[in-house]
Structure formats: structure tokens, C-alpha cells
Length: 434
Image (cartoon, rainbow, N blue to C red; front, side, top):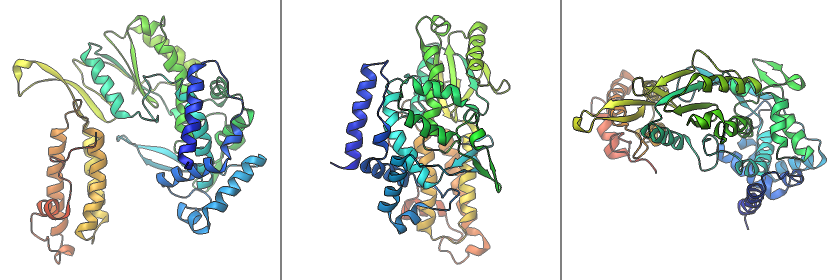
């Protein structure tokens, strides 16, 4: 049996036990984290995710060059002896997923990523058994596509008043003590709780300076392997109350759709009492709504954006007799972002051969098209048309630059040739993976 299969068998046992007994607390988990087959599988997953080196400068490639076996044995030894101490988290700033500025990203060392992954694999099945169906972000077999599909279903069912909530700096403001209370609902192994606490209190390295450390009382860095799970565990407290039968939300027919820290409340009417209760709950959780960005929308009258999609109630211009329909499409910000990515790639690839150029562009296109083209849910044709036009004009300029005069594609219809001869993706003809 492979390391992956052994891990999956144990995960199923954890999940079923947690599902069957909602009040059960798990006492012996730490000893599983440093088992060789668990660390081996954790390493494989960290390697598959790639990622850059942390503050120690040790990359995936360097670990492989110096020996993976010895690297994992050292982690196992430190965890077994409880002498393991995480390094500082390197903070960088990256562009937000669906546009709209930058967000901080914490990069733990490869060693810490493997340790976090091993811990994640042991505790995730337990909390997965508890999580609500309304939560879609950073969960096995769930995705933004599912959240978007659910929102459209709710709109079609008549829940067209939407409160689009924006939490201010959620990952940076999760209170450690209250998060630990949520963890203790299921985890009674103090060694696991101490290990997680070490990651929460790891210093942050940015611009040559170390900040935080043991004084840290809030926040879990975006970018840490275990951070998305911890973020979901804490917001599960909100999910549970909103979805509870007898709650003010349930009595008013309110449905919640959440993807990580982005969520909407939907109903035939979202009244003031519901919003007051939401703010009360968030206050108790020591979380803050961004009042400027959070808004109540009557979706039949005003479009709204969520997870990079725009939801709007449009007239059916092709079949006017059919009336209006719920048009779900890439937002304008998302359209600009994909064009920006293509433009930046072409600037960077000044002298690439057609094969290498196509490989780079296909990776950008494929990710975007797979995300925004949801069969039976979204209507990305216009966005695909715009991307097709942008690729045609950009590639013509790219090959007509003076530095490209020796290129075989100089002053030719580069886009068509790259599609036919080199396999460049034509957005209008691409069928995404289901």
C-alpha cells in the first residue's frame, strides 16, 4: 500500500468517526503526524504545490539535491522529540485573485510547509465532517464553481436580495484564543494544539525586519499550508449559526454562500434585523465588516460581483419573448486582469520561440477559461470574444516589433498560425474540463 493510500485509509476513519459522533474529541493525533508515510505524502503534496523558498533560502530543488529521506527524518525526529520550532514566515505582496489591489502572502519554509501539511492531513477530515454545505473555499471536492452555481440557483428561486459582505483583513485578524476554543471542540491532543499555536505565533519577515512572534495574538498568514483550514474552522462558527434552524436567518429564509472569507447572504428580503444580527455575531468573533465595500443589492435591479463573476438580470436579446434571464459572466475587472496577464507575458517573452510562447500563453488562458466557463451556469462568450480579439492584436504587434523582424511570423496573421501549427488555445473554441 502506498503512502497516499495509507493516509487516505486513516483519513476515512477519522472522518467517519467525527461524522458519527458529533461530540467526540480526538485525543491521540500528534503521534500520527511524524510517521514516515505521513511525512512522505506531505512532502509529495508540498512538492506538487511548488512554491518558492522561505526565509532560509531552501527550495524544493535544494531539498531534492541534498536528499529528501534525510530531510524528512530530521522533521520526524524534531516532531517526535517536540523540539520542532518553525522559522519566520517571509511576507511578500501579490495581486488579488480577481483584481482589486494587492494582498499579503506569507511563505513558510519548505520544512514548515511539510510539517503543516502532515498536521493538516490528520485534522482536516475531522473538521470536514462538521463543515456546512454553504462553505465552498479551500475544501476537498469543493470550489468557487460550486459557490457560483449555488448563487445562481438561489437567484432563480427568488432569493434576489443579496447582502455582499466584505470582511476587513480577515486572515490578519483571526483572534488566536477564540480560534483555539473552536479547535478544542474536536481536538483534545494538547501536543497538536501547541504545534498549531507555534505556527500562529511564528514571526513575520518583511523588508529586512522581523515582526510579531510570541506577541502575536491575532492572524494566520495567507500562504501557510494550514491557514485556509484554520480560517474555515473559525468562520464555521458563523456558518453554523446562520444555518441553524430557529435562527433569525433561518426564520427569514436567508441562505449563506461562503468561499473562504468572501460570503453573501441571500433571501427574498434581507431585512435590517438580519444585518444587525450578523454584525453582532461578527463583533463577538472580533471580526470587522468593511462597511464601505459591504452592500445590500436588489439583484433584479443592480448587478453584483462575487469571486470574479458578475451576476445580472438581463434581457434576452436573442429570444426577447423568453423575458429576462440570470446572466453570470466574468466581471470587467476579471477581463482586464486576463488581458494584463497576457500583455505582461508578451513583454517578458521578447525572443521566445513559438513553441515556448504558446506554452506560456496556454497556461494563462487555460486557467482562466476553466474557471469562468461553467457549463449551464455562466455565459462567458462575450468575454471569450474580447480575449480572442486581444490575442490577435497583441500577437500581431509582438511579431511586428523591430526586434522580431527575423521571425517567420513577421507581418503575418500570427494568431491563426499559432493556433493551427503550434496549438495555441483559441478562447472561442476551447472546451473546459468539466
